[in-house]
Length: 335
Ligand code: SIN
Image (cartoon, rainbow, N blue to C red; front, side):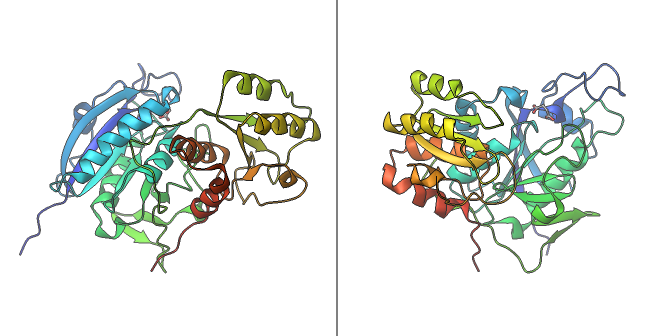
């Protein structure tokens, strides 16, 4: 008996995977988001044996131009796709620059156990050896794998499978720009998918948010030796609802900054301490948490921002916010 191929909604948003340069050797001076998904698929080996693709262009942007409104529009389209009983999974092509933010937003908001997999490319479609076709093929393979269900939103780049909470672009140009080997929850080798054994089922956080949840204004301020406090005051004057402090080390707050962040909290702004270091967990520690600041756990500043935007947008009470970070920022292992 033959099984029908999975039906996958392939939603394209632009990025380098759809980028073109005038010269195949040009890996930098290209224009992102030039090819529609049909043209992109026409340039690569057919994926017919892996899945039945229902392809659609839903945006055509360089992902540096992504906005919260873009996340919501993409999220609503992804939610509609997974709600369609005829669709088994979603693959989203996306620019690599902000892929991690969109992936995390979708992880927090799209309600589904169906696989949702993001991918992109570090080299444009016009490059002699573009990574786009391989990444897209691998992403379709992962989305078509029933074992991908219930793991939350995934990213597939350079043969690695990464959970949305872990995916982060860490190199400006390498094909291996995303995540480190230990971050991967699986890999695609020679057309086969190897999930890590024992399976860490990093399921989507049990999230009260949806793709309709409003997003509050939250900005990130970065710490460094001798940093100015002017951005904090300016953002508070602008009316932000929250600030993520991307501090050094364990989200450390210099004395001069602490006074201004304290003034921000007095003005009703929620402050979360995260770390610009990119790895490790930001824990509660004195004296920073003698101030009324939250700490981000294992979420980096960008992901902390997305969570705070949703939590404040949903009207969560200030007293519940650290609990929300604690619940979401700790990887969930379920049987
Ligand atoms: C983008 O993020 O859209 C451009 C860069 C890339 O996709 O690698």
